[in-house]
Amino acid sequence: MTCAAHTLPERSPVSVNGVEIPHDAIAREAQHHPAFKPIEAWQAAAHALVVRELLLQEARRLGIAATPRTDTSGRREAEEEALVRELIESEVATPEPDETSCRRYYEHNRRRFHSEPIYEAAHILFPAREDSAEDFAAALRAANLVLEELQAQPARFGDLARAHSACPSAAQGGNLGQITAGQTTTEFEEALVELAPGAISQKPVKTRYGVHIIRLDRRIEGQELPFELVSDRIADYLRESVVRRAAAQFIARLVSKAEIAGVILAGAEAHQVSTSG
Image (cartoon, helix red, strand yellow):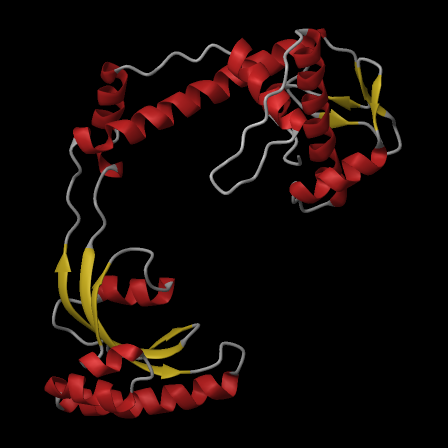
């Protein structure tokens, strides 16, 4: 068996140990596998359904009884989902990561474990509909006029925010309080990163909400997080990594013993499983 994955022409029947996977089932599954070409999506879907069928056959051979779980949002597992999960849980050994392994990962990846910077900022928002170039042009003209006033008298930021800003923060002179990564749009956040404390953006900043004039009042740099605070997160990550590798090896063993027609599975593709329930 080679390391490449190759699918035979689309009309070729796909089967696993004599059980055929219907063409329309592969077509439905293909929507979960975006690709540049339809044939690539079809191939990925065929791979996923073959692996799913292999796992279901093995679960039934071992006499595993499905016990579907219900998640916190009330969604109940389908019986086949439960069978696959319980097969992996029972047949794939996944040792728990110990503290030594977690500490080693922490020491080798310290840069990943930092709190996000905190920004204290204010803004003046000139609203514009995202799909209207005319709105944005008008908002930009208004913002530039106010920016000219601020360049002459930066202390008037609060007064001008109260007079012109369409954001509820106008009542507080445009003050947004403390902001961390992900709480604003990408464009707004990038502008904050570029500003020095006390500075006002030299040109208006466009986002999907309109046009902003931004002032950065204070930046609190992120701090390195101690091991004790992230140890559970590291353990979860290492555990999931072990499960993925062990499951891929388990599936590869099933593939090597199975009679599969219409698609050839090998290498990394051998551990893909259908995303549909």
